Every structure is written in structure tokens, then in C-alpha cells.
Amino acid sequence: MLADATRVQLLWALIDQELAVSELAERVGKATPSVSQHLAKLRMARLVATRREGVRIFYRLENDHVAQLVTDAIHNAEHAGPGVPGHHRDSTGLAALHDVEAG
Image (cartoon, rainbow, N blue to C red):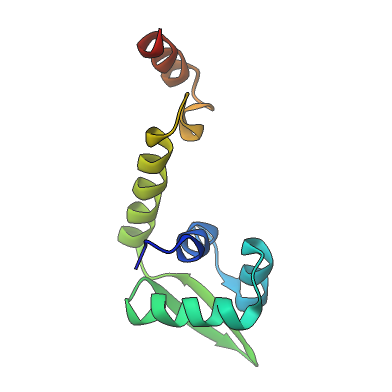
């Protein structure tokens, strides 16, 4: 399920916020019908939940556990790359620690 980069981007976009399909499509740079198909799969996997407002459907992460799963997956992927992971750049102490480890 999370092997698809578009699905990971959609989940990441939903961290701490609820967005409509059109907003999600814009954020991930994909066509709305394609995003809708990805969201349907994420919904079937119980990773996202929906709320209807008129004709618009809003998506959010199903729960805090999904948010933690997505955050951990992104952070783990950042650690696999070169240099200081992006999630450590905002923290002076952790960035310094990584610089020491690399040196």
C-alpha cells in the first residue's frame, strides 16, 4: 500500500490537516481522478477517513496511529539518504550530532 509514492505524498499532505480531493491533487501534482483512485485505496485500507460537505469530500488521516506510521516512514526514508535528514535540520543538537557521526 505505501510502496506507491503518490499515496505516501497524499498521506504526508494530510498530516495535521483535512483537505478536499482537489486540494490534494494540486499538492501532489496529479489529476483529480487519479488522486481519487489512490484515496479510495487508502480508504479501503483504513488509512484515511472522509467527511462530506455538500458536493465536496474532505479527507483526513484515520487516526493518530496512521499519522505516526507516515511520519516514521518518511523519517526512515530520510535517514537512508546522504547527509543530515531533513527532519533533523531544524534541531541544532541533532544536526550537530549527525555532523559528528559523519566526520
